[in-house]
Each structure stands twice: as structure tokens, then as C-alpha cells.
Length: 497
Image (cartoon, rainbow, N blue to C red):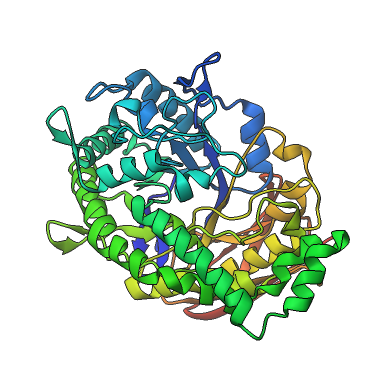
């Protein structure tokens, strides 16, 4: 495995090649024990799963674990579990997969509720203020909108409230240090995603109410929305799935801007100091692994993320990156087939601004979702094309039993991309209609390692001034280019049908 570093807005390896990663999320949220809310954890990956990932051309996995799995009691770490993860990482390295460790949470915790959806913190870290967790009735995210137990737990976490004489954040950061000490030096591990979709607590409930009120206001008062058409859409059964068509990127941003100030305050006053606290502990164990920032839950909706740079000892850390998430408002619903691309353009433009502000590389940590039909695949293709435009790496959300029974992996996720480029990428593009892939890059020094492009189909023709080889691998082909003078190089690969 190559060593991966950050260089401005690029990932690079020890040869100086720019690296692009394409892969998937695999997350162990635990399995409920009997009729209780207690959970057992065990990542179980057989050889067939590695084969499926490899045959899609993946080269990275966002490896999700939880605080509850790692530290079931204060200061008592489940090292047997971590040892089992090390064995999976061994297999990842054998199969050529890089990993970044994701400390996952949804709704703060499972609260050991037998009907609960959440995951993350152990029960001992749930300071819920006496509020009872209530399982959702319609969608899992209700807990973020209404559930006072979820809100209070996050409030106490961000306040660093004490358990057994130590603050919750202190426990959490020590837990991360233990994980990094056990797994951080593994050759498959490139970095550490400190917290999945951090949520602001009670202010999150305030944001939800603000957004609903602003949505009503925009719907009733903005003249670009036709109330007559909206009424027809609601009344005619065949048109109801088109309800979101009335709301463009302009309307989305007009609604979500009502929450900008609250999100900015959370990002700057709570999230950034927390990330820096975690970074201090991680760096005690590992000096070079990449620390991944995320956006807060509501910034999935194009609300600007205002998190600052990662600092250690008061100085900008030398190795951190951004791992944003974004989903269209109709993702994971039957309306997904009508999602379009307008709103998604706005959702992806905001992480780009964040990237440019902090001058860091991006692995887009979560995107996609799932529906059993194929009509929404065009939406995923648009997202992937935008990733290519920005030179972003990505990890699709998410693997589940049955994913490979669908057409999504072969028709959408398996795709050409430049895994390693001996220079600085200028642009690259997958032209589906022509059945081709093109790359332009600038070489400014000799490189001992080749430029490598993953080709998802058999190669019919290659146009380049560089010498190349085509080798069957990973369910497709690796087209490798070596040598070449300093300057700009153009490559075009045409695929067989």
C-alpha cells in the first residue's frame, strides 16, 4: 500500500502522484440482542464481499464503527473487537483497499431501545436529562427534529458534561486515541473521520421549526411557486410524486438560509474546538494520518459549513481533509426518480466553497442512498460527474445485504477513474454516450511510478503520447502510463461495447 498525504486540495502518495479514491461505506451499527435494545458488534466480511468490491473497481472503504462498540463501559475498551477489525484491515490491504475509520453516530445513541434506530454513544454516555427516547413513527430522522432525549444528550456532549468526574468529550477523545493506537498505523488506514454528521442538540430542533416556517412562507409568498400547480400535484394521485418539482435550488436555499446563523455558531463555537481537542489526542498516537472534518447534519442541505482549520498545539495541522455529505430532499423515497439535478448542483457547490476556503482535499463521505428501481440512476451519474469536475474522491452510502442483487453496482458505481496520476490533474471526464474516458494532467518532474487509470470495460483504443500497458484487474482493466517529458499530457481511452 502506498502512503497517502495531503497537498493543498489534492491527495498524493510518496511518489508525488495525485490520487483519486472511489469506494463505499461499510458500517457496523450493531445487531439487537433478542427483544432487548442491547447490541452486539461484529464486522463480518467474507471473501465474496471483497471480490464484489474489487470487481467494482473500488479502492477505498469508509469503515464505520461506534463508540458503544469500542468503549462499552467508561475506560473499558473492547480490544477483542478492535483486534477483529485489524484482521479485516489485513484483508483490505491484501485486496488493495485503503480505509478511513468513521466513528459513526445517528441520533447520538441507540439508547438501548428495542425499537430505536440510532447508534453511536454507549448508554453510560447518554445524559438525557430524564427525557425518554421515543422511537420514530415515520422517518428515522424524527429524533433530530423532536426527540428531547436526543437533543439533551447532544447538549451535554457539547457542554462536556461530566461522567465519573470527566467530561464526555474527554472520554470520547481518549477513546479515539485508543483506537488510533491500536489501528492507526495499519498500512490500509489513511485517516480518521472524527464524528459522523455532528448534530447541534436543542438548536437542531429550533432549526427544524425555522425551516418548516420558512418553507410555508416561501410556498405561500414566493411568486415563482404556482399554488395552482401545487394544488393539482397534491390532488391528482399520478402527480403526487412530482411535488418536489416545485422547489428548485433557489427555493431550497431561500428556505435553508433561515438556519445559517445557528449552524455558523455551532460550527465555530462548538464543533471546531471539539475537532481540535480530538486532533490533539489523535496526534499523540499518530503524527501523519489524515484527520477528516465533516459538515453538521443540517449542512447536508447546502447550509454553509463554517468549521475552521484543524489545529494542533495552536498551529494548522499538516494533514486534514474534508468529508462532506449531501442528499437531495427526496433521496430514499419513491420521488427519488424525479430528483433532477438543479438542487444537487447547489448541494455540491457548498462543499466546494468549503474546500477552497480551507485549501484541503475532499473525499465525499456519503452520497447516493437507494431505491429498488433504476429510474434514479441518472441522478447518481450526475453526482459522480460533478465529483469528477471537482477532482473529488468518494464513498457511496452504503453497502447492505442485497446491494449486489441490484443493477446499481454494475451500471453506476463501476466506472472509470484515474487512481494515480504522475503529476497534477487538470481535468478528467467519463463520456458515457461516446463510451470514453479522458484525462489531462501536467507533469512537472520525473516519476518512478506510473499513471494508472481504472477502466471498467475492455479497452478498444488508447490515444496518448505516453507508452502504456493494459492489464486485466479488479473486474476491469488497469491502463498504466510511464515516462514522458515535463508538460501537459492528454489521454483518451475508448471502451468496447
